[in-house]
Each structure stands twice: as structure tokens, then as C-alpha cells.
Image (tube, one colour):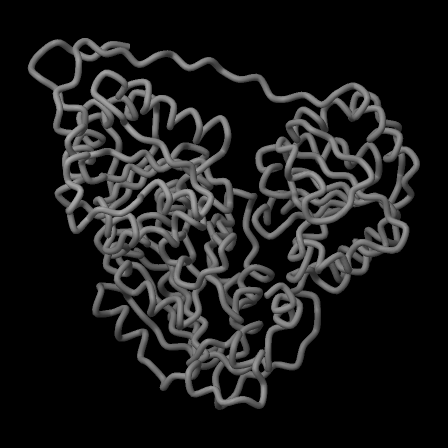
Length: 549
């Protein structure tokens, strides 16, 4: 593909035009003088752009868009402070191996005393992202294509630094964007396939745990699990992959139901598919029973065995590996007995686990709230969950239709990312209702992006689990002075109305009638639910989670 011949073109315009031709999906950012022209070049190339209220929110929007859509999201930021503002979101994306591009303006070579000047390469590398640079007008096309290919083909978050003097320079004409070759999936070795098939043939109680790297391979994993009699589970980030599967255990790890934890612990073979089997997914190894064999299938060699010893490591694409093993696997009933099927049907979901309802003067029980929201909100939904003591409730109780219906930006465990996550996911899947589940701390930290939601006209539900403090710390540090982590009651519903939301304060199940009315109505404005929740004394997963600190 070749650029047109009319008029001079700057390098900034070239970069935006090349990325548009390569097929990036959506751009987000806060525009300043340094990224003004490259952002407009993206827009001129047909790439939609959303102006966020903070670069941190824009970064997470781009991350969530990439995860949910399967296309590369772009973040555009000003030099220096624009990039530093975005760094928590960039770190989350990098730790989660999100294919994402950051277009970061940078000070020019002669601007050694600029107040914006920082070592952007070092900053980016410190959080695990890949630093790239447009070095000159003559190399601009190659530099931009290299950054894009690194993001897509290596599943990396790439920061493409754009020095101001290079951006302003005239680009050589004509320029051409190469056609990128389609890459075939990495197939496992025949030896590895035979070894995994032999382990499956010998297993009496196999369990598959699918992670982020297995997203999109659900059909192949279901077929292989049926052949060898395996039960199916996911890590939190792949939640929903086996939503309608009768042999699904849901999420493995801290959010696992009691029955799921029991059955996973009882497995004699655990296979992690695109899943690192980390401390969260395996409860620090407690879900791997005595004598159980462990297999890990991954595209990245350094991921295999990184968190725990494995009996077999298979280097390969998840879907390709599952298909190859299916071709030679023996038919087994395995873990799929009538007794296990009945147990999963009766007790497999958190909804079926009894509890003492804590609803009362202090507010609504978070379980009661979550169960009611699951019943009231449309099934075609995308759920985004922030971090905090509350986070297990929406993760465990709000069902999603598939793995694209759950966006969990928790690789860095930062609070305050959930609202921006929901914005990015909503734009990736406009056919589904976006639901942002937030704590009051994260909601107030990200409150500026409520304006973005209202401005974009997103028919979103923002559910705030409001416990008037940083609940994780309140419950973890029992018996200590909580002055620094407890706050007076805040009318978050009023804040939502100020930004253009419809809003309701919920203290009991009866107050949720307003939610049902919103769902049944025209949904002309987004809805904010300020749910004053009763103290749970510390969520069931909290003690386990704090072991990782």
C-alpha cells in the first residue's frame, strides 16, 4: 500500500496513517501539544478516538478494548507527564501481556533542558513494556511496523516513542506499508503430544484449567475434555469460557466455589492451558492434590514451570495442541461420573451455596446484592471488576456469556482501573451491556471518567460496592487503628447524577426496584448504583490473597 502523492506529509501523519492501514482498532488518550498531530492522523485514517479525562484511564481503556475485541488498542499521550500519568495502566497491560500500542511523544534530541524530558525508555522497561522509537523520517515506516508486529506477534505492550523533532520532519514520499504475513499457530512436537495423550489415558480424575492464553480455544478444549473425561475450570481472566458447559467448575483459585475447590484438589492430573498456574489460580498450590501430575501448555517457554514444578511442559498454541492431542487421545470417562455431574448441577455455582444474609442497618449483604444484579441485568453483558475486598462477589456471582464477557484488569492489582476497563470493553462490544463493579475507593479514584461514560452515551451500569473504606485493609489488619483506611459515608449516587447518570442508593433488596425499572426503560443515560454494603468481616478469598504480599 502506498501513500498518496499530494502535498507534504509529516512523520506524525505517516505514523498515524501506517497504523490505520495496519488495522489498529480504537485509540484512547489525552491530547496535548506533543501528541496532537499523531492523534489526528489516526482519526484521519479512520481510527476512532476517545478523549479520556486522565491518561491512566485512557491506558486501561485501550487495554480493555484490546482484550475484549481481539484488535490492537492504541493509547496516545503527551511527552513526559502524559506518559507518567499513564504508567499504572501501562504496567497492568504489560504484566497481562496485552497486545497494545502506546504512542508517546518524546522530547527532541536538542531539548536536553526541557522540563518534559525524562528517560522514557527506562521508565517503560521498568514495568515490563517494550520501548520502541521512531528514529528518523527515513526509518519511520519500518519503526512503526516493527512496533505493531511486536505487539501483535509477541503479545506485548509496546511504547513507540515519537521525538517531537522527528514528528515534525517531512516524511519521504512515496511510502509503503508492507503486507504482513499471516503466522501459522505454533504446533507442539509429536513427542509432547504423545506424552500428554499418555498422561490423559492414565488419569482417573483429570481437570483442565484454561487461562488467558486459552481464550478463543474453548471449542478445542471442550472436545478434548469430552474425549478424556476431564472437568473444566478457568483462571479468573478466562472466566466465562465454559459458561454453558455442564462439566464446568467455573473459576479456579481464590474465587472457586467449595465444590470446585474440592474437585480440583481431588484431581490426579491438572493441565494448565495457557495458564501459569500461579498462586491465585492454585491457592498457593493448595488446589494441587498429593500425588497429582501437573502439565502446562504455553506458547512462552519461560512461562512453563515459572510458578511451580510441572511433570510435562508443552510448548505450543493451545488450540493447536488440544486438536493434535484429540487426534490420538483415548476415549475415557475419567472424572465425568453421574455422581460428579449431579454435584455440579446442585452445588457447582456460588448461587447454590447457602449463607446467612447480613443485610440490615449497615446495608445490603454483598452476596444478596450480587445475586439480585445477576437476575436483573441482561444476560448479554460484559463485566469489568475493580480490585478490593468486594471483588470476589461480582466475579463469582455475575455470570457472563463467554470469556469475552469478563474483563479483569488485575495483573498489577491496582484499584481504580475498573471503570476505565468497562469503557474500553463497552466500545469493543457495543452489543452487550457493560457492567462496572467497583469498590467505593476505586470508584472515587476514577470518578473523572464518569464524565467520559456520560459523554459517550454508553448505556452502562456502574455498581459501587460501598463499604466506606478500603475494605481489604480494614479486614486484614483486624484490631488495629483503621483511621487511614476508613472514610465517612459519601453520596456517590449524587456524584453520579452530577456527571449525567441516573443513580440509586441501595441499602436493601427492595431498593433494587429502580434497577429493574432502568433495565426495562429506554436507558437514555447510564446507571450508577451506590450500594451501601454490610460488612462481611473479610471476604472469603481475602486471607488467601494476602498471603501473596
